[in-house]
Amino acid sequence: MDWDPQPVEEIDAWVLDEIFDRAKGWTIPEEQASLKRIISMNGVPTYIVKVGDIEVVAWEQHVWADAAVHSVSAGRLCATVAFTGITIHTPQKLLEATFDGKGIPSYGMNKANGQPTLHTAFPIAPNFPVDIARRQLMVCIGTLVKEASTLLVSWSKNSGPAKQPADRDQAKKPANWDQARNIAAIAGTFLRAFAGL
Image (cartoon, rainbow, N blue to C red; front, side, top):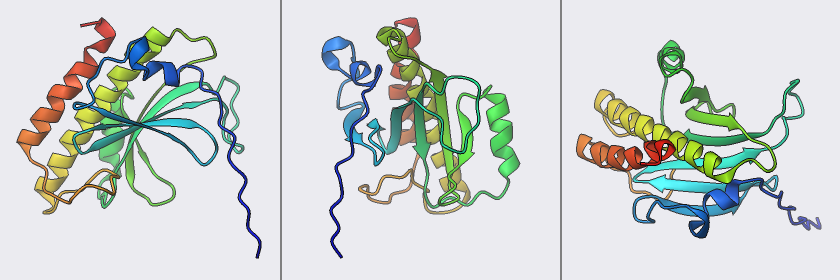
């Protein structure tokens, strides 16, 4: 069988690359939040922002999925945290948490593996002001990191070994409140971004 995969054509980002460009205003130090840029299988530029053990994946959505029927623009700046090794016994709690947080973050379920996820997104379009998008995304990242850290500590206390976000490189170690407080402090830096503090 002759298999010659064609290179994926990278989609031009509207604001994402500029958001994470240090020369254009990204101020979070690498030791607090490491950055890695990848191209997804469908050509979408994607950034992985790692704070402690939490990985937040950020990308732009330009079009709706083929099966989706919507009458509004698909343009979104999205951020997600995916978990592994979690068993949800009371899915209603995720809906209640989404209600309590007014949708930021929202809780979801990965169709492929049945694992819980955390999400944020806000509308964008070509020529969207980068500074506003950066500050909004930073608050979204801070919210995701803080919530994910709290969930990991809570889940580990309730069920023995810690349940980890989807980070295949890290050693499995129990989560603790000291680590959660450190991550929360870094998350606070992101959360203050919108006010410019």
